[in-house]
Length: 179
Image 1: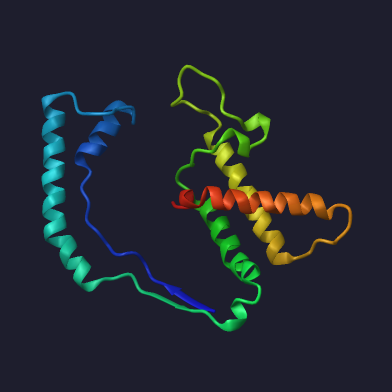
Image 2: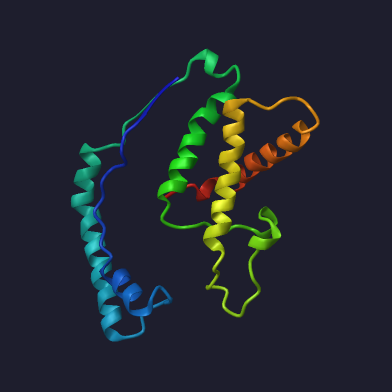
């Protein structure tokens, strides 16, 4: 197997309204309320329209993301092992440099990490810990797959159960694996 995935295409964006609203309302806003905010929103939309019809079109002409993938027949023999060698380091890198946390269902974490029942659903002090727990479980499962170091004794069933849960979490939160 040989994989090369180049950087994403460059794009120009404008966030003057978005940044202003986040700074003024500390990310707790839903829509513009003042005339100035409406004006900033219209300016942002106009600039975005201009960018998309000029500069970003030029970027699109010359810079496509380069992706080259070659799969050999032997890569398919134990594809779950082959993919584990790729997925494990990617999950570790994502955890290391993550800039946010995904929503995690209560049934996927131990009781001490479950969502607190509060009057303010936007304030959740455990959101980062829940996401870290889910990432750790995925990483643990893929590391065990790569290492293949478990013995087939009485503890095997418990290890296999935890691995299966890590793979289940990977599938469930697949679309949350971005930075």
